[in-house]
Amino acid sequence: MRGRTAAKRYTFGLVVIAGACAANAAQALDDQATLEQKITVCASCHGADGNSTREGMPSLAGQPEMFLIDQLILIREGVRRSELIRPWVRGFDDATIIAIAKHFSALRPRANHGPADPGLFTRGRALAAAGPRSRASPGNAKTIWRRRSGLTATARRSGPTRP
Image (cartoon, rainbow, N blue to C red; front, side, top):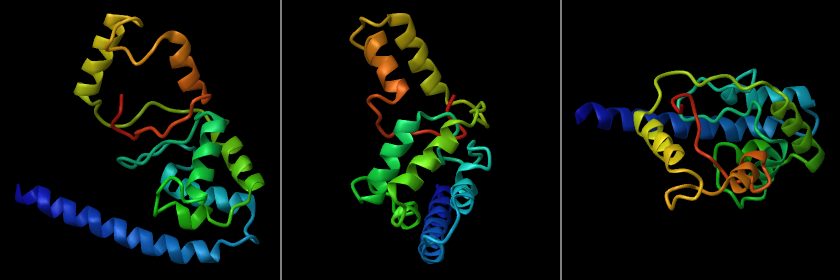
């Protein structure tokens, strides 16, 4: 129990420090920064190839372009709260957001790192076995395709430990 409390304090401290650093660095990352420099800033957390190796940090590689555009605009406008990312994207115009989304959506996703979550694996197996018409199913094939293609883009949890 004591180890968990210390880990939570450590994680909270890192988030506070990262937020302060992000706010200061974002001021330096103004309109004069090149697209490559802006992508490098994104890659510092999401991975140079768009595949994050940080626990809880989503990988951007291979995400649908429209999903990335939607999320960046929602964050930029303050509709979706992300105190770590908003300072970076606050000054981005639509053309920059589109270019960043094109870049990361064109990258090839890799398998996640670390152990798979057995609970998610078991739930996925049960959903697959139940079939698309089951009440436990997240939807039929058309709905699932729309979600995965970015047509009904929503925020997702991802990171190195998801199967």
